Image 1 (cartoon, rainbow, N blue to C red):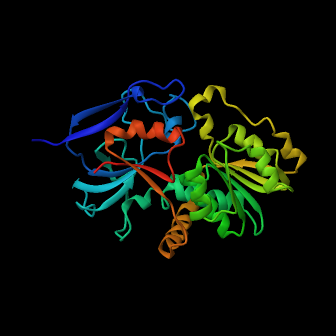
Image 2 (tube, rainbow, N blue to C red; image 1 turned 90 degrees about the horizontal axis):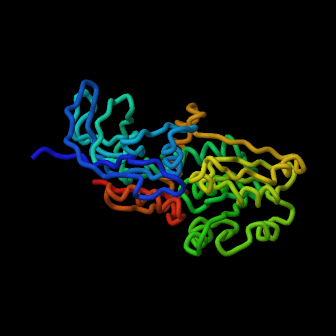
Image 3 (cartoon, one colour; image 1 turned 60 degrees about the vertical axis):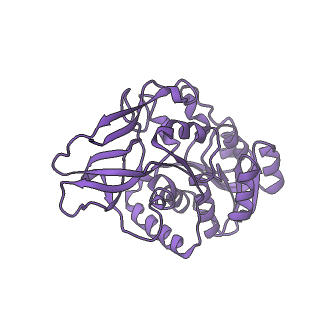
Length: 334
């Protein structure tokens, strides 16, 4: 019997929160390969906040059409090939999509070196949307200095937890903002952050004022909204605010809650700058090299939350936006 490809497609655009009703899970026959193409059995798929911004039909990121396979970066192994040197069994990384098998031209893929590490590290610590983003955001944009009080929001998430660890390596004292006791314990006991604020049970403004009476020197923001305002109100002189994301706003991009405390930037002679890792292609290689070194040294870590089954991809997206995941959220396919 011919193998089938199980895929998740966008069936309607979400209005507000992402729900499973916006997607359909279908099966298709595998299509023959063309010249220059390989077929990959997908192993792990990355569940990223940016996927939500691709479902609108307009915006900064690539957009998906109705009926399209839902975008997802992933890793897997070649099971069929028309290209010399791209042999069956080789591991690859690329835009594999929310499906069990992927047929792609090799120009969209990257061959991965074999190691004793799980393939999923190439989506997490070594992933462009995760570890590389954190490295560039801290090293190139935020640039914390030794002794700085440095705040990270969504600090127990994939990007935030790595960003906080890199800021520590730069000599900063890191205050993480996250939601729930499990995440706070992770920040304090596993990542050894200086302090952690539970936005679900604590007043963020009051806690920041208590922890940093003279203000904070830097902020790496993944959340936006009220959290961004709270930190802007607690800036030290000549501090830096780095905008990596705004997950609190992605479900209603037509009514974004912008910072109401932005005049604090003028009062405190401070700067705010946004970035995306793909704006710095020349830094991706150096970022991966240093991240790989830290990984082998055991001096950096990233928790993984794994959901089994390609049909659970819509559920995984909802889980991310509910703030449920600790570290990198993945869907395991094969």
